[in-house]
Length: 60
Image 1 (tube, one colour):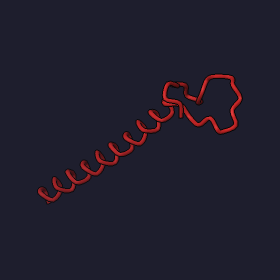
Image 2 (cartoon, rainbow, N blue to C red):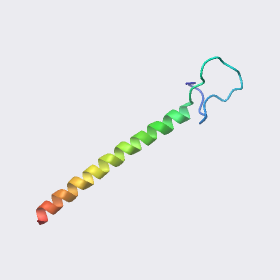
Image 3 (tube, rainbow, N blue to C red):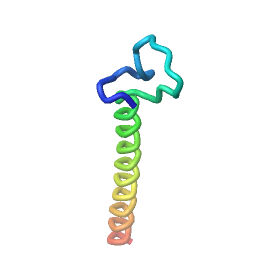
């Protein structure tokens, strides 16, 4: 991973290197944001389910 590269597809230079060129920071940030979004959605649905169960328990 190149520290100063923010391209979605990896490094943007045309030089041929022997190793894999990995991914850019943009890809890492996008994947991190998606993982955080999944965790927050899971937390929100769990909280809403618990609150709804508690409310139905009070009414029933």
